[in-house]
Image (cartoon, rainbow, N blue to C red):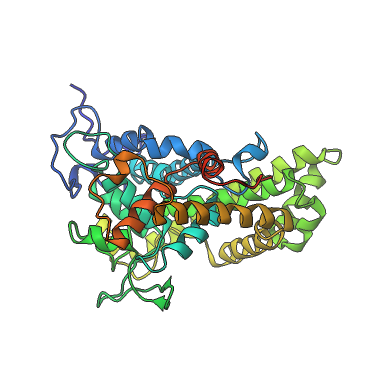
Length: 413
């Protein structure tokens, strides 16, 4: 039998001392026999890929509704792009590539239909019932809602993968257990953890006051890189942004000038692709350089040492962080909040609100498997069940269901 418990990474280099070691995993909530052919993190990756939630990403919005054009990113193609960048970063830093890949592949499983528009609508309708957060919904999906296995609910992923889903953007509470972020409710902003994380924390401590592993930090920064570059590409393809407007963002203006200087007769399509490709390369190289500096400064000798630092180990340099903010500001003004996108997303929010209202009020019946065990007088339980059902919908299923229940369904184009 092949021994997969090796200290050699995928690229043939020894794994760094601060990388997550699959031989030292904190295990799964429900104990299982070890696989003779796969590490725990490889099993996690495979379970995510084979999950129903992963398949549904193919028909969930990234920025543009999935039927608006075959060349725009869906939530699934975005996820695959994040995974590629995460693996490249993990290989360069001698981390566990399988854990980084698993976290990248699963990081968006909790997203609603219609991207952030659907999430805004869900946050509003769930304000009185524990709120909604897509990272927390990812945890809920992989620990409860997936029903592939006879022995347990969810996917029974390893502790390190669950930790990464919850904390890839940093600690959630301070040393005294006080939440660091306010979540909005109907009565105002309250400092409390998202519902799914509060519930799961009773079963397994995810060390919410510490940073996540370096692999989780890799997945998080890969997400930033991917949507900076690829949302820009999609905005240019959609005609919401013109090449000349990139002059407003110094890092993008420099890349355009660099490409034009070398390729004087390049058409706009190839120019866009070349700028996007170079932006990803510059950002990836910057993250590697900054991470190596921080590794040299802190000299972490274990994955737990990374968790105990007072700042992330894997991040942009200060200069690139400023570029990242400038790109996001540009995309927010010119793509995400553009008139065409806002109009579509406003209508999409209405679809989610309508569906929630119909199922919560009882005007529409949930499918039989979603009604099982539901207390008819427990409003919070019913709201959470309806939330789980709608959050799992694809864009096209949500629109079809809305058309079945309502006389007028908006055409999202």
